[in-house]
Length: 581
Image 1 (tube, one colour):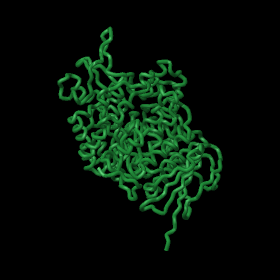
Image 2: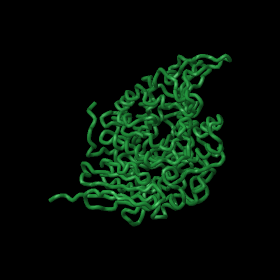
Image 3: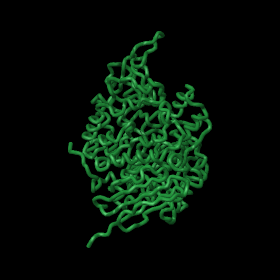
Image 4: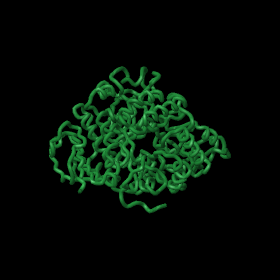
């Protein structure tokens, strides 16, 4: 491998330029009236996405699945989920998107499969079955007095009390870091790895343009399986950190790159919980031959519960100084050496405007625009989650039965059932942090069922759809939608947004996020100054102006009051140095 670069790259690769839009198909658009979004429904909305201006669509899993975890439990990697349509529907979507200049990124879920996958159905029948080593099996650590098997270690699964499930036919435990119905695949087995590479080639040969790789840094486990000290100390959340960044993970990803990724002109991003910036350089370094970008979650933990035993479940507001420190660390440490993925929310996170902005009617639009501006002007690939461009908000359901998410119900059982959290507090935490905030159906209109479906939707609607919806946004020139459209156009027109270096200003300011992007290569001589007020107050700020002729590039207000920053005001100045004769 070559030595890592010490300076920011001057010229960019094509995969660094796009803006990506994530679609959670179940909640995007229902074309046949069964209450569940589908592939024809996505195809119907390609003109909408083209109008927004996005370059790539990331589809959350559309494969055959029993839906224990809404498609992240795959029973056939080469077929389409019945509720979503057929392979012909996918081919039509792919052709339509490509015709509109939009690429398609698939969700690659290969840390685990469904227990209904044929591999696992075969594997559990006999210790001698050829598929046995496609999964991870362990003997019991012993047996209780009543004969119950004792798990090999104390790890807690993301969606169940233990990562180990006893299989009585062969009398061994299998590992599942997530649901009981999501057994982990054994990447130590070369035959399993080749199966994964073959299914990747299947989709790439169909014409898809890349992969988002689900929890890809969990694929290599420490084969000694030591106990989790956090669980021993009383934590009730999960032990994913014990499996993250395992001893062979970079070997496996480099092999994937050599066998598959290097042979196609595609875009890749890995979901990588429990990583540092040093890990990020290993996964996505320009010289590494692994992945192009990664999703890290450090900024997603900025408002986690101070009681580590409760994990993310909390309703306390984040501190801007902490958020700036985390985001700036990733900007600085990867600069010139690797590439960031930029996001405020996704299918596993609460809505950005409720979490980081202000979803009150008088501030929702302005603060949603502010958040979009802050994100899109950083260095990295911006991701827009469906409905973010409309300013969709979190939801509060006062009945736990109205939530669908397996994580919500598992955490409620663990925390409320044990007495660690009161029922009323947990409902507030779920409203602030739960995954179903992102999964309520997209609000297309103020009509029945928000225009999402003709029938009862699979998940209860956010009642604010009558005021927040795409039809309203498209009719309002001052909407969040058109601001996001402008941000995308600016990115396409200004290379400094892509290759400019990043420099945080006033790190300890608790109210304002301000930073510079200083041009390199094709954008040399240009500097961007971003200023964003994260409060509902009018405040005063003054910044040293960079050299060059000043232009107000974008703002979420119609005028500019200079050093006066109004509630949730965000503006970006472009400074261009005049060329010497």
